[in-house]
Picture (cartoon, rainbow, N blue to C red):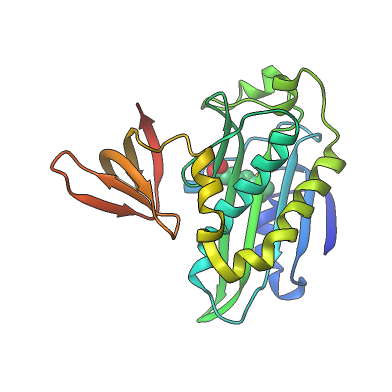
Length: 242
Ligand code: BTN
């Protein structure tokens, strides 16, 4: 694993995507400050100061894109939860990969598959963790969010935290690639905040409503609508749950 650090960059994901052909498999790009941090659905990922985590992992597992790669975000969310549990916290996962504590987001993950023409170049797996933010910085985020230091009442060593997260990720990485989501399904389910609840899910412009019955072996959400029809949802975002 190779580490590349920038004091400032536009976005570690953007850097990794643009330079992917010159970056080795398992290179980690991290920074103290992103000027154009990006979230899912073209949202901005707010900068909360240098003691928070903004990093992207470059992965080049094969020449061809495999379906399992889509679940790497869920695998990373589980790895982060394990670490947070070691701090005595009770993290939850909001499908597909947001990590929340007491219903407030502490981490977001953005995976981007990079292709040049038809040819698959790799995956950029970006993660932001609110590790050491102050409440006024958090209030710049337009959704319920918090930071780990605020919950623990003390600051957390960023270098150690990042190192542990990467260790956790790479220790189970090969097994994950071999067996896919199935290999983390039970653990993911235990942390899933959305199971057995009525959900509203935004899939681009479309809003789907129903009862979340389960999650399948590929990390998809199984939603049952009011007529009893089952639907498999593989992208989108939970916008309401109750
Ligand atoms: C989301 O919850 O919408 C995903 C947020 C992902 C943020 C991280 S921070 C490091 C990497 N670089 C980016 O520009 N985005 C990801």
